[in-house]
Image (cartoon, rainbow, N blue to C red; front, side, top):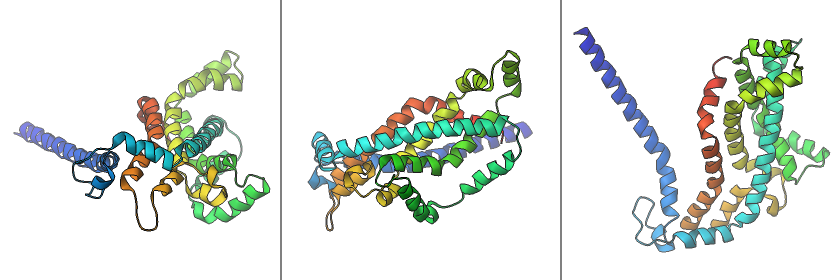
Length: 282
């Protein structure tokens, strides 16, 4: 009786889990499906609402018009430059700092790490003005490079914490064995540690790329030339004071999120394992 009751409870638990997961899946995919379907509608059909099946289709025309009106060719290059710069800079600094915090022993190490964690709690809005004068003093106002460096600095706390957690999970015996074989500290890092960091890197690349790609607030504050704005700014082209071209706006949204989808597809095989690996030890 007890075994039957236990099996029944487990079955009910699994059913409830599946129901929750299905609801979460629908909640997640419904907005994306709505945008995708709206991007296929004609201008007349778009006003009928997003939850009706299109009666008129205008797929190729919508995407061509959205690309031209939104000037995506210009904004896309700006966002790609900032994203690549931010990802590479974040990986470099987070890897070196995370390895230092995880495997080296020196005075003040824990204090520096906790200061870094405290810095993550400071909202960006509270440091917008000091950052303005910092960028101005460095000659990086109205510069894509300045925004990329700003993104690296403001996102480095989380990146270092993530890489440190991953490096802590690597056994010290591997490092000691490499040192006994005559490897320098740089050799240990490049020959032993880095070949095993791809899962953590994959996760960090996806997270950093998404943050950089969707960043609109900082460019709008510190860049004064419209031609240097990132791709989210292109979506303003489809809205006016009185009307909005919803089918073109939806097509523009699909164009703007496509590169991030590609990045995720490229690294998704290692994304989950990297997140889990960084959570093994703190």
